[in-house]
Image 1: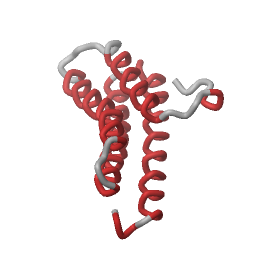
Image 2 (image 1 turned 30 degrees about the horizontal axis):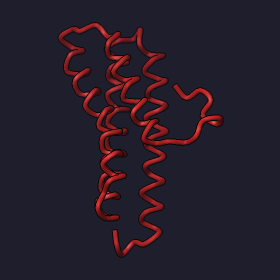
Image 3 (image 1 turned 90 degrees about the horizontal axis):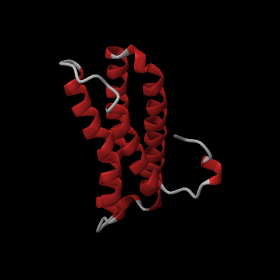
Length: 127
């Protein structure tokens, strides 16, 4: 998932899309039980929303709209971490997969936090 990060051109659009794709691949491996179905629906919504909102942020019409979309990205990344925790509890055999995905969601959360801080510090009265 995060291999060769230092050798790759940094592209957050690609990274968030890849995360959504990785999540789709992961949930395909989870048994579709009564417990797992709602968890899968929730995590797919939150994990894929990160990239969708980041794309919207890049097309934002104002700094305020940009910051709002980035805040949503951060919120969805945090929510995804929560659902990974619950899925790992319900499916202990998936713990290692969940940990890897959780780490990526955590890194995305930190990235979006930094973007929010940077965008606020640059010109706070316009945000």
